[in-house]
Image 1: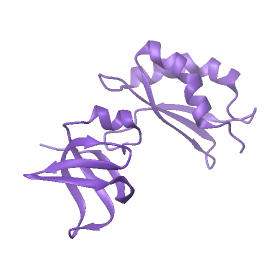
Image 2: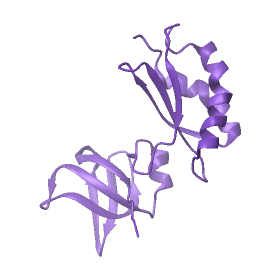
Image 3: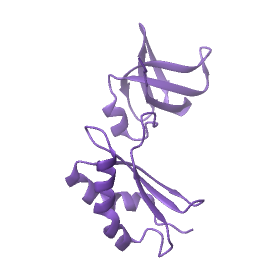
Length: 152
């Protein structure tokens, strides 16, 4: 199915998201089940009411944008989930000083999985503090980085 660039759709939807205090963190289109999923975040988290309110707010405008060139699709609005990977600079900013999990493509000093506190980042590197050690990781070696999830 032919779909308009998701970056254009994100820009279009931000006019509806921003006044609601919503950040669009990702947009995915699944050709398999013909679904368009908008992943959202708010400072206080995302619940079903937030997803429903945003879905209702964008339903008609997104039809006028016509992301699939008149082809039918299912519109979903969702939380990105607790273990979602960091993709944008905003994801990294939001998690500075917080505990993260890092999965590497290949082992570094014998480890392919690291945990620590995110202390710095730029476009090429991510720095985490694990125990007393500060580890600077090239971003191209990171398969996935996300917030550490702890169950008590």
